[in-house]
Structures are given as C-alpha cells and as structure tokens.
Length: 127
Image (cartoon, rainbow, N blue to C red; front, side):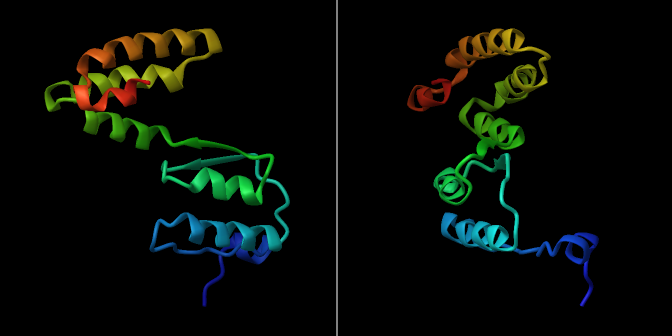
C-alpha cells in the first residue's frame, strides 16, 4: 500500500466518503481529533445541511463557511438561464474584495440585483 507524505510524517489518514452524511463526517472528524489534531481554525464545506453542527460538536472553536464555488452554483440554479452568467460574474466581487467595506458594498449591490432576478418562489436566496 502506498503512503503519502502526510501519512508518513503526520499520520494523516485519507478517507473517501461515499455518502455525504453529516454523521459520517462527524466520525471522520473524531478520528482526526483522536490522532492528535487538537484545533482546526477553518472548515470550508459544500453547504451540506448538518455539517456545521457536526464540526462544532468536535472542534468548538472552529469557523465554518460554504465554498464560494458551491454558493455560485446554488445561486445559478435559482435564476433564469439567461441571467446565470451575469449573476455569477456579479457574485465574484463578494469574495475578491480587499476590505470589509468594499465587500459590504458589493454584497448590497449583489442583493439588489439578485432580488430582481430570483423567481418568486426562491426569494429566500436573497435573504
């Protein structure tokens, strides 16, 4: 069996999770903690419901955020096909800005624009 550099040096185990269940991820995180990783500052996930709760149950002081690529895909599915490219392009400044003020300004502008484009049944995305 081949061992990666991380496995040899730190004992990190690669796991393949075939099911996107938060319970499976909790077991994986508990295994990582048992192996000696005491603190993880930031988790970036695909937005699977229940993941943040499982992360915080194992690593209390961690932060969790959804990957921008997944957010962009989710937003694209909620708008008309004719406006998808434009909306996804308008989303990029939210995570590419250099300051908090610029980011807040970009968010405000994006929300105004998306409220017009999102179908009535999906108004929750703009919230």
